Length: 146
Image 1 (spheres, helix red, strand yellow):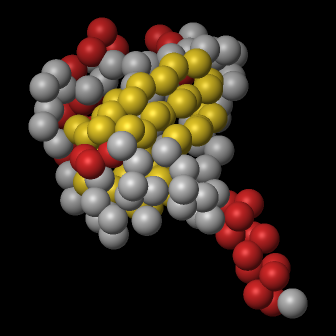
Image 2 (cartoon, helix red, strand yellow; image 1 turned 90 degrees about the horizontal axis):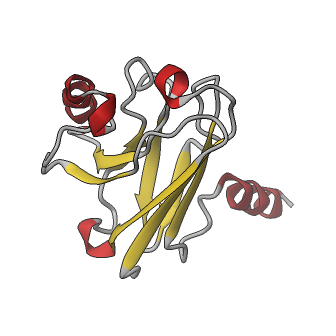
């Protein structure tokens, strides 16, 4: 019975979706992603990030993006992104540490981007996060590659 409950909880958390080539996230006006961890397959040729902003505030007040970087560089990526400003989606142009990033969106908007799956390695340590100023502390999650 415990095994069944564990498997149901794992599936609900999104960690059991190892065949997925999409990262589907929602963000809100309370500076939260709807998931703390997402899983993608190491066999994906292309991975797509889909972000839906379920809030009401505009991008200038409560904009969100999704950036992917290695766990050991994500904080520096976010720090450097703040100085890039909203016009650059709070991502330093040409930053080689950025694996992928979406544009900043406001309430009611959606955005997507795709990147080559071979940029991620099975078992690698990756984070997804929002680089808008002040958001990193609450809007960070683990990206698992299986």
